[in-house]
Length: 343
Ligand SMILES: NC(=O)c1ccc[n+]([C@@H]2O[C@H](COP(=O)([O-])OP(=O)(O)OC[C@H]3O[C@@H](n4cnc5c(N)ncnc54)[C@H](O)[C@@H]3O)[C@@H](O)[C@H]2O)c1
Image 1 (tube, rainbow, N blue to C red):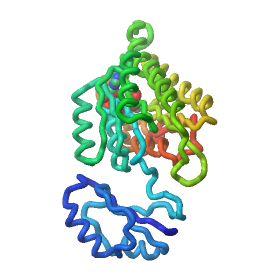
Image 2: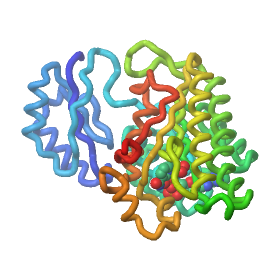
Image 3: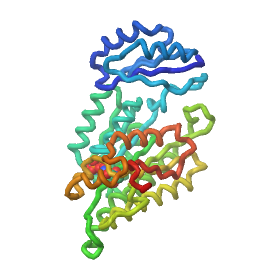
Image 4: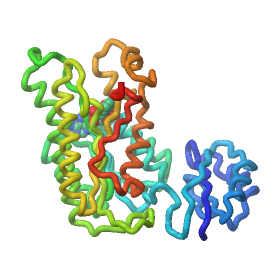
């Protein structure tokens, strides 16, 4: 049916009060207009936007949020992305931005996830949170040190064995290393940061692109007629575009990630593979806590929005860039920094 869609999305645990909410909601919505009823929520469709606006005002869903989706014109365009068939890989998923991204993909409908982290405890917590959000996720959770080449090979072999393909890769694992002027740093300090933040990301991206190239292209789900093989989102940093005192290894690693992103974007632009980078500013995660900066207040004060960002705010950008809605974006370096770099 051509028309408009309104989505009621569950904000919390999908199964909480489900029957109660559904009964309340269904009482106000003509059954013929319900096109999708899942544990994530309810999608209602109508040819007239007025009808949906009436539904939106009449129904106050207790624990659901509602949003109008893009007009549908006969093409499959219900959500930002129908992730249900896609295999999504996320590194550094045991904490912070990686975990928030995994949860956002699940909230958006992803059903096949491979999450990787060096810390098993963090990964277990992420696994529990994902399962809480959806009981339908086929989840592969791998503890691995991605700075080791053999571990990278093991991870992508396991993904191939379990899912047979890969559609989205989010390279998020990272460390800050030691913050000191160069004369007080050793080459070991440099190697440690470059190994995790840059060399490891290069190895992972190589494995991801090799996997994409073994796969057939598929049409983008926006109905715009182009094709895709897969999409990579690298988590760089605003320190991939500017610098900061005493942070030479980290700054070098993140400038390197930006360079790698642009190079692979160029090399694979006409082969159905998109590679983009996100450059977060100061985001409230464990990584920031471990920098040893005495207090976070100066970081807030230095940010025009006068606050730290949240991992969820970065995750929204991740899921957009990974999706077919970003089909004309490759080699982009997207800042999510509360205005820090425009000063
Ligand atoms: N938090 C910020 O302010 C900020 C700002 C800009 C960029 N970033 C980048 O965002 C990414 C995610 O960081 P975060 O803020 O979520 O921090 P975080 O510490 O919460 O998460 C990083 C995750 O990477 C994992 N990891 C580290 N080394 C690994 C390895 N060798 N193999 C596998 N996993 C490994 C950690 O165990 C951790 O779970 C990093 O690349 C970081 O550089 C963070």
